[in-house]
Amino acid sequence: MVSAPSGAGKTTLVERIRQSPNLFYSVSCTTRAPRAGEIDGEDYQFLSDTDFSERTDKGDFLEHAQVHGDRYGTLREPVVTNLKSGRNVLIDIDTQGAAVIRNCGDPLIRDALADVFLMPPDLEELRKRLVNRGTETVEQIDSRLATAAREMEHWRDYRYTIISGSIEEDLRRFRQIMEAEGYLSRRLIEK
Ligand code: 5GP
Image 1 (cartoon, rainbow, N blue to C red):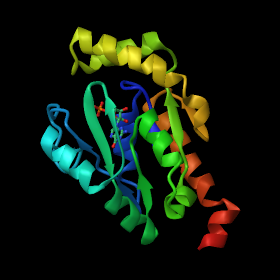
Image 2: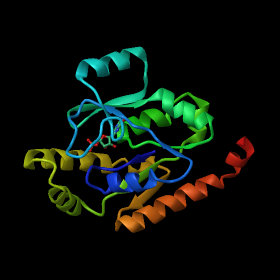
Image 3: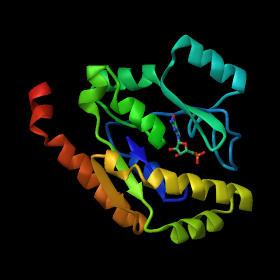
Image 4: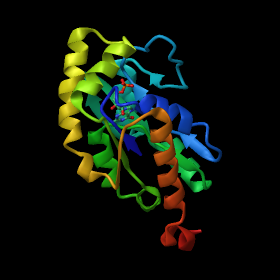
């Protein structure tokens, strides 16, 4: 499970990690409009508000939360199915959703869990990255920075924190964490 304030470089990191062998990326549902280049079913499942509510009522989500004024949710079924077949599952999630998953009662998920917070070096750097990305208005950037400041207070809740550097550095550190997690004695016992 990986969390980061928007603009911290998480999307690029996640895109690269997604290419790892034996790894399933959990495609979230969202009511947010697709950004240029985003593909339905690959980046997100883009849902209307009504459809999102229906899926919530059916209990399809492991967790769901309101982030930056839109709704986001992690689908339960694909996560469980892939964990059961021995694949690593990567979940991109905000700090509220991460807290729900951390307290999840399902032992399959609890035992599989490793959480990583990707920490931007500072808020000024984050503003620069968001401005360079050019996908948000000035108001949206201000709102995302305010959320970022709040989210950055949660880094201590995560087992790992990576202070974001270059994409290659972030990628190397994330892979090292994945590798080390694989050596946990309890994971060998569970196999
Ligand atoms: P973005 O709109 O920039 O793709 O994502 C905004 C935020 O929503 C990010 O912090 C991202 O981690 C979070 N997010 C993405 N998918 C989910 C999800 O399924 N559940 C929750 N709680 N947050 C999500």
